[in-house]
Amino acid sequence: MANTLVAYFSASGVTKRVAEKVAKAANADLFEIQPKTPYTKKDLSWINPLSRSSKEMKDPNSRVEIVGTVAEMEQYDTVYIGFPIWWYVAPHIINSFLEQYDFSGKTIHVFATSGSSGMGNTVAELKPSAPGAIFGKAQRMAGRVSQEEVDQWVHK
Image (cartoon, rainbow, N blue to C red; front, side, top):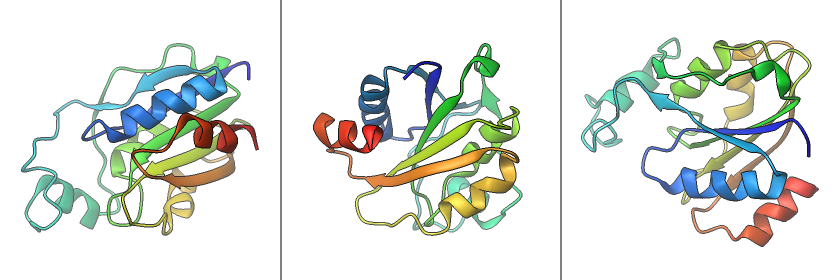
């Protein structure tokens, strides 16, 4: 798969491990989406309504400032985007990432890590952040997904 990128946000390292498997399966470049202000364990407490992540996810318009950019994004035709599920959708840092680039005509495949939460409205809520993109397959994966399972998803 030429001209393919795997971009991912990983709060705890789980999504990073899956993203590396997706990049291997797709023979893709890898880019980590990193917040300018890293999340602490307290920031990620989903049971605390005052935590940073809880506040961000309550406001659909919140965006997270990102460190770094993808060099020559225009060279990629296919982009896999990975993240942990937060409140049944993508963390808003993913919207921030999508809004930085023109994805017109590019195919985006979404993968999310979660122990039990489903994808919910994830793709529908990401589409406005990437107008003109073609959204392909989406998949929730357990953190311990095998390389073989990832290969099957990427190549179907």
